[in-house]
Each structure stands twice: as structure tokens, then as C-alpha cells.
Image (cartoon, rainbow, N blue to C red; front, side, top):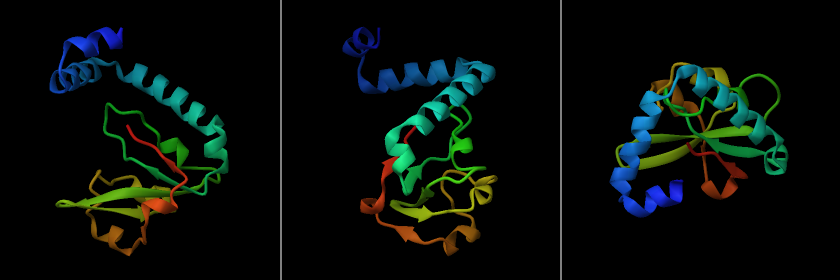
Length: 127
């Protein structure tokens, strides 16, 4: 189905179609899909062997992947800090510090976390 749709629309149109579907998605459906996504990621050999992972702070309609960095022992995580046109990967090992953060990680407490080179990453998760 997606192949037929993609061949008939340009990229901005496709993005708007996807955004519309995400806006219309039922929160319970998003929660169920997020749980499946987290289980699938956790079962991947690359995940099990990873020492350093880059992830994203999910927006409301994106997969809620917080269980991957909260709770049990996990790989270390990096999150992108956006400042104007600059992006840095911050290594954040205390997952609970992300609870109230937005995707820019612009609160002062994030200035204390070390910056990591992308070449050090074992896994990158994108929405």
C-alpha cells in the first residue's frame, strides 16, 4: 500500500498524510504499538550487545520508548541536544533526568553531561 501511495505523492504531501494519521491515532493504539516496538528492539542482537545507544525523546504521537532507558540495566544512552543549528550527542545515564525534558535538552542541567562522538555509537534509534 505504501509503495502505491509514495509513487503518487511528493515528500511534503507524504509527510502531511503521515502527520494526519498520527494525529488521528488512538492513544491506546499508540501505547500498544509502543510496547511492541520496545519488545522488538530489546530482542535484537545488536541491542543486546550495544554499549552506547543514541535515542530520541518521543513526542506525544511517536513511539514511547522510555522503557528502553528506564528501569533495568541498559546500555548507556545519548540524546541530541539542539542549540540553533548545532547538535551535540549528550551521554545521559540517569534516565529519570529526562522526565520533564523537551527534545532540545536546553535546560541548564544538561550542560553537565559529556558530549559523545557519533562514531562511538553502537545503535541509533530514530522516530
